[in-house]
Amino acid sequence: MAGEEEKTMAGVKALLSWAALIGISDSHSRNSPLSSCLGHSLFVSDFPGAGGRGLGAARELRRGELVLRVPKVALLTTESVLLDPKISSLMERHKHLSPVQRLIVCLLVEVDKGRSSKWYTYLSQLPQDYTTLSNFTVTEIKSLQVDDAIWVAEKAAEKSKSDWNGSLSLLKELDIKPQLLKFKSWLWASQTVSSRTLHVPWDEAGCLCPVGDLFNYDAPDDSVLYENDEIEVALKSCSSKSTVEAVNTSTESLTDGGYEESSSSYCLYARRRYKQGEQVLLSYGTYTNLELLEHYGFLLPQNPNDKAFIKLDPDLYKITSWTNESLYIQPDGTPSFVLLCALRLWVTPISCRKSCMQLVISGSQISVQNEVQVLNWLAKRCYETLWNLPTTIKEDKILVTGIDKFQKGTAWMDFSDFGPVLQELKNFFEGHNLKFEESKNLVLDEMPIRVRKSLERWRLAVEWRLGYKDMIFKCFCYCKEKIDELSPCSKS
Image: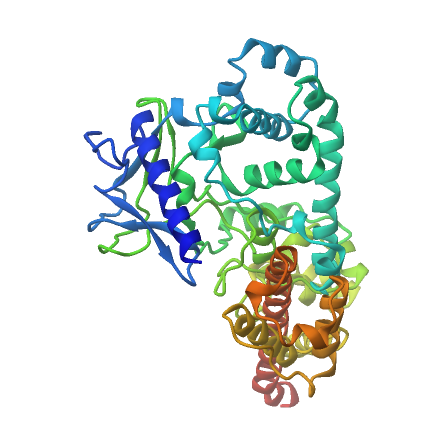
């Protein structure tokens, strides 16, 4: 392990030296020593439990202060790779490819060049594998347990396969190495693009930004606000069938920098004040944990933008034109504004819906009886959702704890009192042609690398479903608490 750490640090040092030579700098004056592009504002460090390798503040940083500048010449984009006329000519014959497919092809072309690529040092430091949903096996996808999450994972895997098939003829024409034609290589490149690109105005696929992609993610606490004029528009547009028009909500793109024409550079700024030694984080948008897992391969233990969806009655969707995505349970267990409004209207008799419309859209209770009915229905649906899942919250917590302990070098816990957990554990090892009884005596380093990687993805699946169940359970408790508060009023 010590040898691997030394190799990693040597690679990072080489990357920072190469970055300095190509013009990347964390200094306003760009007079950084050529031995490293960092040191004035940032430094590379490991942040266990907070994203792993990332960037820390080399000094106290002010909010809004420029902390990294990456010149356009350093960005790996489709445009930069297509400066090669041969590659450009071949790409021109495949106009059906999406911008993302084109960037993935360009990345594989640069990998194929080896040391002759100007990005070789950068490419050699990229992760060799990812934990995004596209990389999940059938068994790992099944471990998500929730139908919506399983569907998202299956679609992600299908899309990767489809994009590869659609790009294969171009890759063959480019005459790149045989191993880079394989789906495994495409999957690696596609997940590199998915998890590491930053936005640029001239290409919707984005760019790969050396050093800039070392920032770990910080979730913005983006609350949804409903403006009065939007409510008025919705009220005025209600039809005689008592449908509710969608209340449009929009939020600004939450980022901490972007490409600036004035300096022909990608410029990144401190999103808040940082003390020396603190990890400097980058916010690149509002994501649920499932979206983070799909696109970036990680989860946030405390994600203010997470959402839990439950199965709703089909009739509920028919009476409103609010999007399905707006009908969710929030991290603290409270139903979203739109979900609560929709349920209040749904349980109202059809003959009374039109007269109650203004109250519904304003977010007010229609009546105590209506509110209790809504909360009772929601509590029942939350209970049914949890009951129908294969494992409980307690069992998932025990399983996550067991996996964590094993990954830290201790032996497997005794799961004999937890039947579903024990069975899932056995299924995991049998799926890798290992006997569970023998695995109890193994240490992590003795396991095949494919099993270790699978274990990491499996843990993420269990952690995700645990977070989902926690939101559903909190909603159940919220409903029961509100019902107890309102029940005396409903009886009086």
